[in-house]
Image (tube, rainbow, N blue to C red; front, side, top):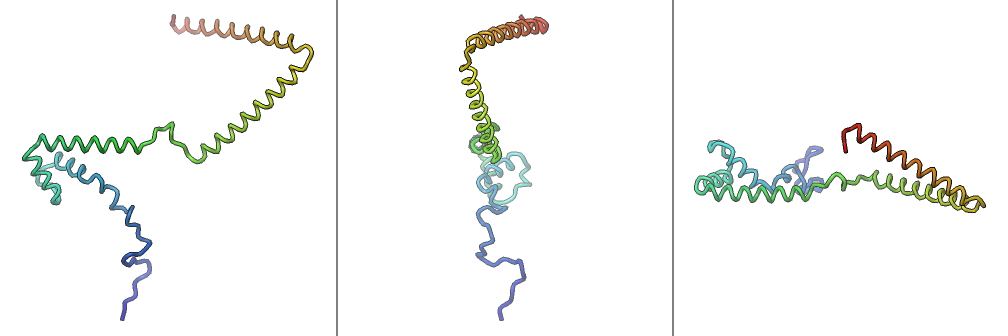
Length: 159
């Protein structure tokens, strides 16, 4: 008579078991580095497992070689970690793409409206006079801004 299994229990080769990315799979690539760190930083009596005991023998026999290998492993780990990290400016979330698209569309609409307004003003018979007066007003505003910046720098003690 075959025993029935309890609900929620797993059988061998159950497709619900994720063997590739389970909890025990995270550190497998750098277990040697972790063990080397442990051996270099702990007492001999706290060594666990055959790998740490072998590394302890290596440390006792050739400390320079052991630490050279440890530094090589640290550098490889740091390089891999740097590859995986993304700079904050490069990180893009799903909402960013949508926001950029909406803003680009709004900018395009604004530029189209501005171009239509400019074309309408250019059709007027007194467009040259209006343009000249606007240029003079802009020139005056830029001169005032330059003076204010200069006064601000003098107040701050800048040359």
